[in-house]
Image (tube, rainbow, N blue to C red):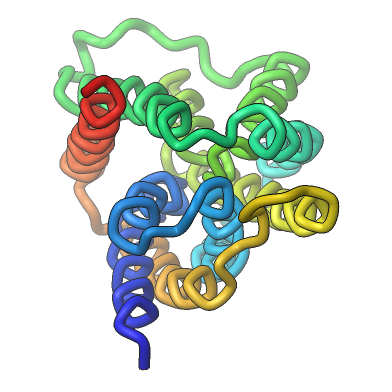
Length: 261
């Protein structure tokens, strides 16, 4: 068997196990591995990441559904907001942002704020944090989901890595946000993958996903997502968020340095 497929499966499993408990599919961390280790070309890396989300998503979602964590309307509102955004983001990625240097800079622009946000939230004692107002109004939540959908379509990350920290920062519990964010990630990734498949028929360049690598990573993510969702009640939330924040900040700084040098 090709070593890249085995490595992709292992990478997907490890990343999803760590990220699923906080509502992140792991694609945001898999993306730089695809670029630097597996050499997936641009913009094919984006639909390959979306393929990972589609294959990996049901693992965590099945477990969260089994635990009754998908019964409220938050997941539905996030899905309805992000779906149109991911189609627009896919078109922007193919026609406006094909260059690898620009893509690396955009990765840094996404990962650095995300990593700093997660780290600061983990390190700040609860009694020193600003007060929160709870859940966003429905129209604001839909608008936020739409913007995140566009970003997710561009980066191929589904959007859960942005929705999760924002909503938890508003005071919502991780146990409620994580399943909803993963549901939005799965739905938008499915639509985004279809959009890229259509765009590959009318566009030149590497627009279609790397099918075998995406399936290998996704299979690992399917297993890891289930494990992560199952472990969520037993994991120390503060330590997990700090780990995610540190990793995202390091990866964002790496790509910023590569772009600027």
